[in-house]
Length: 119
Image 1 (cartoon, rainbow, N blue to C red):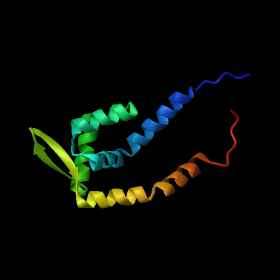
Image 2 (cartoon, helix red, strand yellow; image 1 turned 60 degrees about the horizontal axis):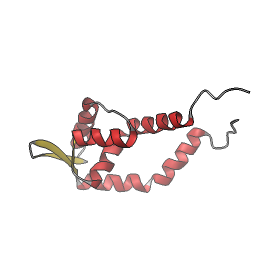
Image 3 (cartoon, rainbow, N blue to C red; image 1 turned 90 degrees about the vertical axis):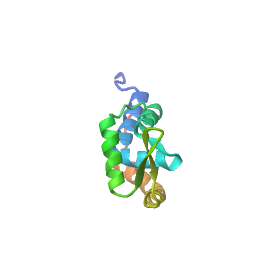
């Protein structure tokens, strides 16, 4: 009998972290839909939720891109820069949320739902 090399928890964590990293912009917008946050707040939340340390450079460059696209707006609040969703950002997130089912179907295609694996 072949010993299982991979721990299911580690594989799950890897996939979760990979998705979080690849969808960092949508993850940031989703968090900003809950409350105004600073870059540091976002780093802390992502680490807490996904056990994933995102560098400040990645967070702030993504925030800058989102701000240039008009999806968020930053402003000074108690000596730190805090970001909020704009109306355009809210509309974008409504669109993303409406695509949840399609995203699930896409993941099923990627994973090959009909593929049978021994386990």
